[in-house]
Image (cartoon, rainbow, N blue to C red; front, side, top):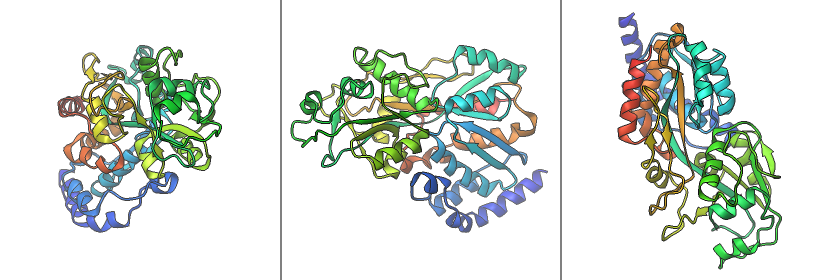
Amino acid sequence: MKLQRTNRLRAAAVGALAVSGALVLSACGSDNNSGGSGGESTSKAASNIKCGEDANLLASGSSAQKNAMDIWTQTYQSACSGTQINYKPTGSGAGIQEFLQGKTAFAGSDSALKPEEVAQSKKVCKSGQGIDLPMVGGPVAVTYNVSGVDDLVLDAETLGKIFDSEITKWNDPEIKKLNPDAKLPGTKIQAFHRSDESGTTDNFTKYLNSAAPSAWKHEPAKAWAGKGGQGADGSSGIATNVKQNDGAIGYVELSYATGNDLNSVKLDTGASEPVEATTDNASKAIADAKVTGKGKDLALELNYKTKTEGAYPIVLVTYEIACDKGNKKDSLDAMKSFLTYTASEDGQKALGDKGYAPIPDEIIAKVRTTIDSLS
């Protein structure tokens, strides 16, 4: 078996450059996010992958990491063609439920497991429990489509009121105050939120509740709790609706904003200058995160109220959720191999031009050690 794996890896490394040029990420068709990961870099990364046992690896969850999963899957399968990876971007809530029902090898979630979900996971993990492995981070961009406005500054207070239907016109005095030089129209605001349970919603509302509790009194949750607005399915649904409707505003991961050529709000955080939604600025905020998980669990606590210069506070971290012990035997080896690649230096670097921020070195080192110990 080892000889077969070695031969397969050598053959894949030789042919990966030709193959990668012909592959197209599925995200390009569904979300208009153009551009591949690069043939030469894909081939090099593929040559460093150590394949696991052949398997059909099923996973689901976070749509925030869909574009990342597309890149990772393309590169991994160019090296390990015997393993088929099927990741369904059903949303964090649905992904966790499928994992807890034993339908998938792992789940993707933009929020860590709740205590009751950890308790439920013990039925699936048998001798262990579900744990959170932070794999990729990035900014949640507040995208907008307002005719004649290409540069817009908002703060947590105005965002909270907009998404809770307290501010309903783009020329509202509170928005004018933050944008004295902008020609703001009297267009009605169309605020779009996720209709499905989403970790992106959870993180966005954590920011609103933390940074502007007087404007956003709802408890943070995966399910939308604000008043009014319009629901859209998945990040791609919000991006599409914002693009098609003048006066629209919504929240999506940065890759969906850039991939659809959408404008993004700059945030007034209290720092000397408004902060743009970029991977570098998100990394400055993620660097403030603390590991709060116990044992092998690596759940993070983010600082949504940071005023650090250049730190963009609306960020999320996507976790891969797996059992520490008691993983599915028929897919354990393949899952560990795939997650080892996603957490590797190559796997993290592959996402830089897609709007994602790599996990800080100190944390990702712990992730790699934990993946190696999964059983």
